[in-house]
Length: 235
Image (cartoon, rainbow, N blue to C red; front, side):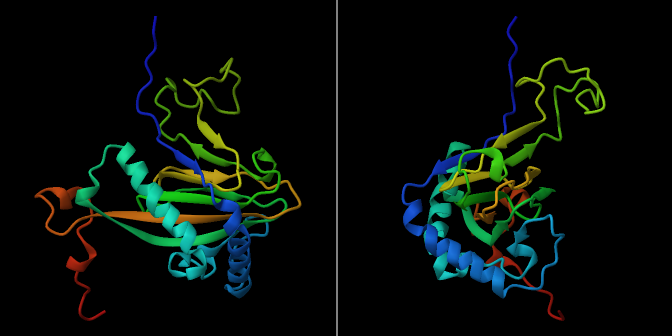
């Protein structure tokens, strides 16, 4: 009997052809931002993330203009693949920051709840294409096929074999020059960097809003255009 699978998670990726020509500038700029950032606020075993250290606006930094342009192009392609009408949507990069992972550092599981689309670009990866430098992992919190909650727990051995119907995570190997896009609400994390080198990536959060003058009902499901907002007068 056939078994149909529905409701896939759409993760988009592209290996950028011109990546190597921009690698050094992006590395230098990322390390400079780390050097200039706030005093470290994360645990030593966690990667340095610019959003926690005052470096979350690389989208307006001219040193990052090439990758910003790439993100804009590919986000639009991603949304078109998902079937959205871009004529009714405005897109904004809300924030963007470097992530620098050294030996035995990782990024804990989290989601980007203030955004709609997230992007990761791998600037520099030791042993690119292997899991040694730390993989991007997406976690399935819904688990629609877990017929009894907890069957896949590490405390049981009830799952005889893992396959595409019962997997609870998807893993992407870090690949230098690769851009990955995914829904910002999807919980994800990055496994430990076991190499002696730096894994440097750039993260972007993108927000969708309705265009001004959109058809009735659009504002119920998308934020209205920011130019229509009004800040409280006394704040």
